[in-house]
Length: 167
Image (tube, rainbow, N blue to C red; front, side, top):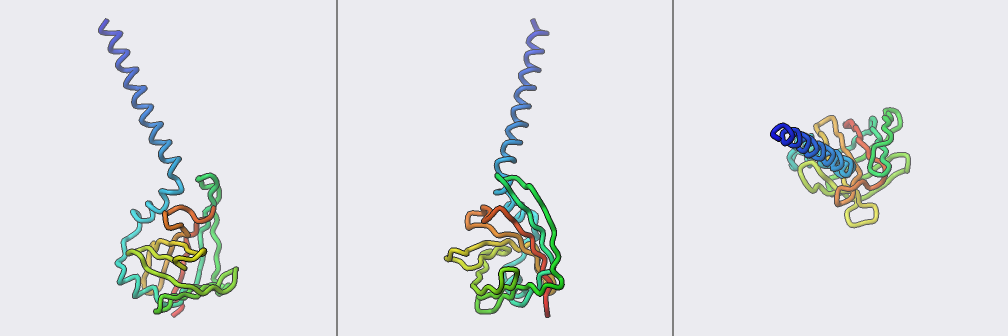
């Protein structure tokens, strides 16, 4: 009888641990897109807002970006594009305005630093989009986005953009 109850206990424990493992996998699958912004905040070096404000206000030349494409919350494709000779840039000005030049042409709008490493472009408009600053210094700036206000992907694409100071 003891042997049967010992075997039953081992089987029940195994089933319990397997159910815990499968639950963990499900949670990860369900939050693939949502957790991205959490990963950015945890893995990034937290930069103080006053330092970001000091470094950000200049013209930044786009060097390259990584493009991640998602479908149904899962990463389906990842590419890198280089732009060294294309003259694409973003310029953050002191009055809270920016100018951006890329494939879509020239865009002018507003920006606002919301947190140490988080900012919004065109807040309160249909073009509102949020970005995380992964790193910033006198000469280099890397951001990741765009996200919605609730940290969801804005589109099926997520960009990590690498900029170099033009000054």
